[in-house]
Image (cartoon, rainbow, N blue to C red):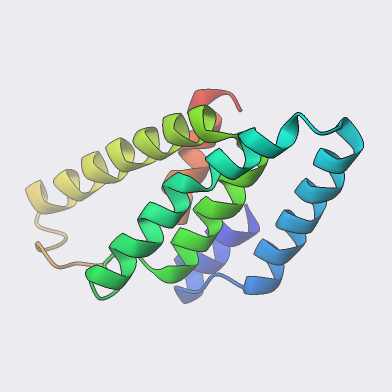
Length: 126
């Protein structure tokens, strides 16, 4: 929720928050046992794909968003991360379509993506 606020307000995602989330996830995974490794490693693949997309698109999707997706994938695993990500992209698409229809934005209008990731988490019940 904090990342959503800072993304809306300042268009910034603080790396320290992502680092704290990754650290907490690693500690929890280590406490659970070795079965987490495959799930966590596979879970970062969607985020790495978004990081590549971010680099190729000159940050149409920002690096902070991609690193946050990597962090979420590490803690959730690939299947849940993909479900959250697809829900977030769908919600962002609906929002952008609404902005265009009501003439509040144009094709290149930037919108913060982290609130849609949060809505994806909530809608997926994660």
